[in-house]
Length: 154
Image (cartoon, rainbow, N blue to C red):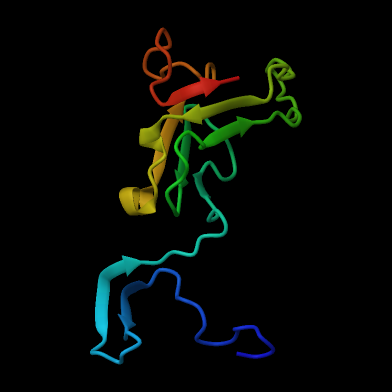
């Protein structure tokens, strides 16, 4: 306690710790103290979303597109969002048609709850969403169907 402020080592709980809370009181007649206890309380100080990890792709997008990612903590349901943003064309390949400008970019979509699993549920393999480069929002195995892991797109 310094200058009316409590601070310094030992004044805060350890994030990720498990605690028992014990309360003790003695009445004004100095009778035997009474206690109450709650055991096994988990404490988590969470002030920021943990950094996500994109496992794949890392250097090049190929077809099929395999989006593999790890969420190190539980995310808010419905918040896992992907954006494919066209930057420019790669150099033309002799004998191949010139690349087209992607006028529909950005391609934005959210994934279903089963693809929002966090590290403790998925392990280091993380989540995997497979997409077709010809139609991101259709089922990769049957483009007549909507993609089973995409909830909304634009």
